[in-house]
Image 1 (cartoon, helix red, strand yellow):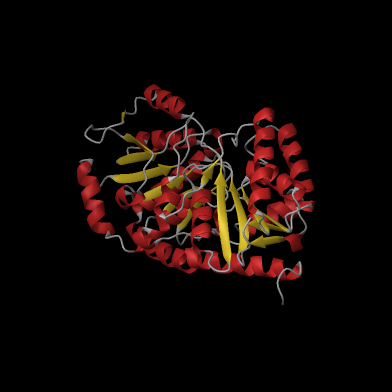
Image 2 (image 1 turned 60 degrees about the vertical axis):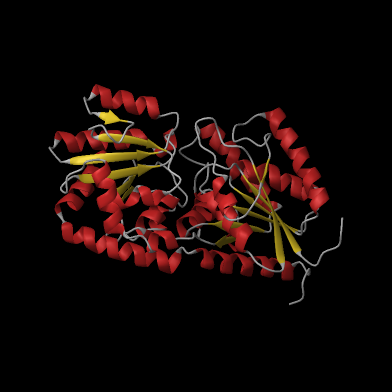
Length: 404
């Protein structure tokens, strides 16, 4: 391999599916700057997901996709992925290995340790210690992560709440090893969006009245996101006579149960914009400025979350947030200022919050204003790059790879 003065980073992502992690790794790869250069590698999206390769491609990146790196636990596949990662690291000879999310963190850190990579870093984009698996499996993953922390030079949490979980609740890592670096995004398209113009255009497309209160739900329709809670919230609001519409952006294994629930309660729905319905299923959307401006509130019903990009984008687009109080969410919204929070799985509390927003136009306007200013100050990609570069240089100095 030719000699280089670059500091090489091997960046590994679980899989290229739509969500915050793909934006995170793509922005870091594109913008980390000199003297760093990055090889970006990731696994394949699941059957019920849509791929997100358009995100790195839009930034001029051409990541390597490993077909054998999958989210599911498949021992033979995982072993193939481990060997492939070792071969790639041997050829690339990075000084830094940085994994993002659980499967990448397990296989990647083992491979990096075996190949003697000097610096090993892992970012938790959420975690799998609760709400995903039963207690036995969750305990097994906790045990694995504690041991992987021993070979890691730094663990990155996306929020104060997540750090507290990792250090105190699940005892994954000692406090001195955990660094808080919030996600950062290129939000200019939201800041520059003419929200009122787009709102009129989109609502006209769906033939909505001015007094329709439009709720949005964005994400994978999977159990941990609890989309059926959103279906129940819709039913309760309809039963109370509220004039609402709902946009569901995404897809997944819970789509059929969602439809069955709506059918059971005689709530109309459609997969087409030219039909009159209460609920519109819009599948995956690559450009959220084609949906968000039409909303009066974005709803999140998850049982567990890291840093959901949908909430940051909503606030950037001046959309109030109604969400469950889980994971790192309290660190990416301001309660009563940009979002109304309710306990996990508490449908009456969430319905009450939505009604509060429906009936209080002044509160809606205040939340719109506060939300955009809040994300401008905390979640831009420039801040992400600045914080990550600082951590990398600090680790390189501690290992004596660069001079102080």
